Image (cartoon, rainbow, N blue to C red; front, side):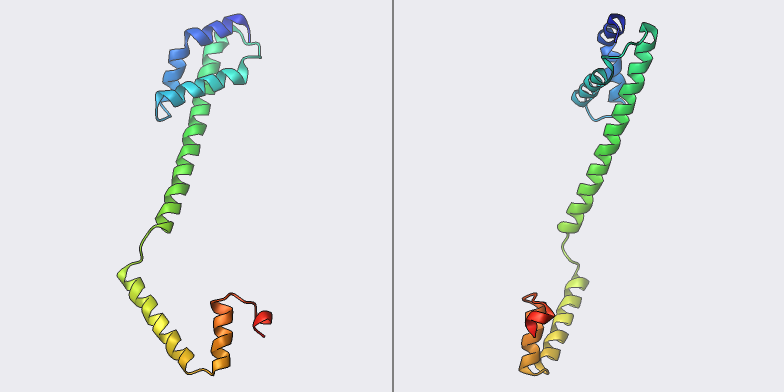
Length: 132
């Protein structure tokens, strides 16, 4: 980047941070995005009149990308925690207890070898070959 364009970057840094702040959560992240914009184009030669619009576009694109990525991360985490830490409803508990009761009744009517095979496969996670 020409010396004039780097001077533009330094002089207009607050404007660039303001551009990033429109899309991100706080100033520290905005400053990081502005620094990243510098790293992406500091070796290229741009005319001084093109420097500020170019930096503004790069900063806004990086900030939008950051915001989208952050939103996706939050969505994934929310889904994970809502699925992991939700307690079952009363209906689910009652239904599960009823299923267990029915399975226990059915098992009590089977021969001992069948019950052993069932337990080995379902509870001990043995393959059918291992059960045999």
